[in-house]
View 1 (cartoon, rainbow, N blue to C red):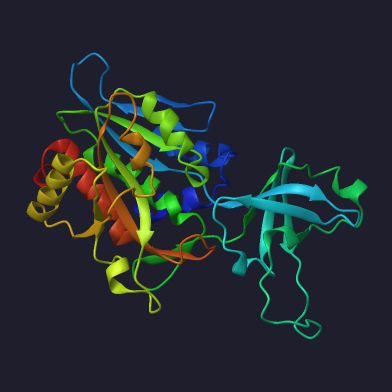
View 2 (view 1 turned 30 degrees about the vertical axis):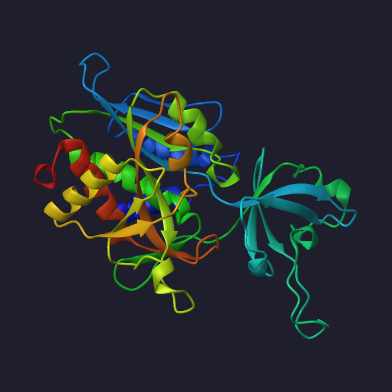
Length: 343
């Protein structure tokens, strides 16, 4: 599979925080191309081990999260409309008139977020609040809708992956399925090579609701060094250059007080020596990613952070450049093999 195929498969799976089953299964299926040692835990985290548990080699953890933002059904009203709450940081400016899928125990149901036509709307400046969202699934009573939908079912906005110009694509959930794709493709790059490390994989759940999966998953692995992978802000015309990365300029290497200086320095050197495009991402404290909790797990894990610049984060139309994802994969592969010349 090439990187776009991997990303499309991952983004096409449902995985709202706390209900990552489909996304976890999709990730595990790809991961089994590189190891038979794959499992999914009760929290929805996916684990893989590449190497041998008896060879005495140190382990490096490669991590990304697989959950996505979305909604949770909170109530069915008397007319059969669904009321919802947030799972993660959804942008309420984007709610109206979206096509959605409700993921129920018996299968997926299509719906739309209802909105007043512009002809009859009194105030075109108001922004719908989450508690005002009504999802229309075509039923006309609470009794009929309740036969197929239950409070607690998750909802995603429908946006299949689409190719844009060049190597750029748009899809829902590239935060952080792009990171998961980078981790999985790094395994393709080192497949069959004799490397000085065992590789542990963690594709974590519930990042969008408090980095919960990474806290659980990092405790369950043996690695003392970790590379966490997430997305970060790419520059758009309404942003400040100093607050963003540049899409198409490669991996963003995190520099922060909570990140290990030795690991960060090694990542920068490997990227420079291997001509892997990179750019620094400076943070004065917490990174807002799974790296924050991984670095605190057990007696501490030496953690570096690799980020992929994306546009329009936490919207249904996130845009990512697959060349930036590949740069992350190449740098991960260089780290675990000891140099870009080995990849």
